[in-house]
Image (cartoon, rainbow, N blue to C red; front, top):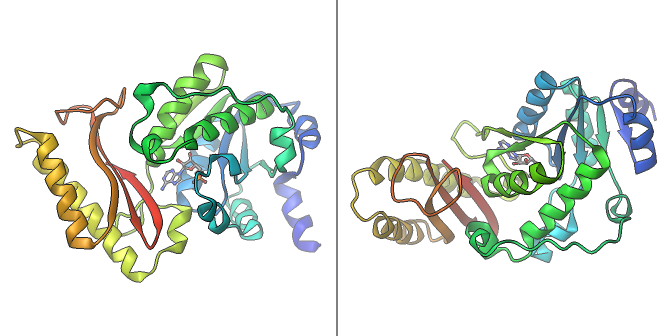
Amino acid sequence: MFYLLNILIQMKILLDNSSLYKSLRPFNDLGFVPTMGGIHKGHLSLINKSNRLCKITIVSIFINPKQFNNKKDLKSYPRNINKDLKILKKTKKVDFVYLPRFKDIYENKNKSKIKLNKKDIILCAKYRKGHFEGVLDVMERLTKIVRPKKIFMGEKDFQQLYLVKKRLEKKYKAKIIPCKTVRDKNNIALSSRNFHLNKLNFEVAANIYKQLVNIKKNIKKKKNILNFLNHKKRELINNYKIKIDYLELRNKKNLKTSKKMNNSRLFIAYYLNNVRLIDNI
Ligand code: AMP
C-alpha cells in the first residue's frame, strides 16, 4: 500500500480511460511513449527525449494481443508491471503511466480496415502476417485516446516507425519523433525479448552486430550487392547455425531495396533460442 502511494505522489497511474480523460484534460503539450513494458534503457531514452521536448510525458504499457502473429510469443512476452513502475518512477521524468485494459483500447468496436500496400509487405511485414495491421490499429486507437502532440518511437523498430509515421501524420496532428537505437556494451540492441536470451545467445548476437558492421563496410566495394548479401546471409546461417528471415539493404526514406550505401540501412531479422530479433544499422 505504502509502495503504491509512494508511486502515486510523483507519477500518476491511469488505469482506465475515464481517469485518463479527466487527468489529461488540462494539458496540451503532451509527449507520448507507447510501450509493451519490460522497460529498459531503450524506452528510457524515448522518455528522456519526450521530457526534453514536451511539458508532460505519458508512457503507456499495453501488450497488444492483436499484433502478435505467434501465440507462444504473446504468452512468453516479459510482464513485470511492478518492476516497470519502479523504473519509470525513478526517472522522475514520467508524469503519467497509462495501463489500459483490453476494453479501454478496443471499446470502439469498429473493425480495423487497415490493409498494408503491396509495396509495404517487405521485411517484417512479409514474415509476420497481420503484425503491422495490429500495430497500426493500436497506435491509431492510442493516438485518439491520448491525443498527444508528439509520439516518441525507436529506430530499432525502423519499419514500424516508418509505417506509423506514414499513416498517423496524415490523419492526426501528432508528430512522430524518431529516437536512436540504444545498445548494450556489446552493441546488442536492447529489447524486452532479450530477457529470454542465454549467455551463448548474447555472444552470438554481439558477433552478429560486428558482422553487420563489416558487411556494411564492404558493401561499398561490391558490384552486385544482392549477391554479396545472399552470400553473407548463407555464411551467417552456417557459421552461427541460426535462422535468418532477411538481410537486406534498403533506402531509409522509402524502404525500397537499395543498391548503394547512401541513405541506406542494413536490416536483419534472425532467431536465437526461438526468440526473433531485429536490428538495422
Ligand atoms: P516495445 O515496448 O518493444 O513495443 O517498444 C516501445 C518503443 O520503444 C518502440 O517505439 C520501440 O521502437 C522503442 N525501443 C525498443 N527498444 C529500443 C532500443 N533499443 N532503442 C531505442 N528504442 C527502442
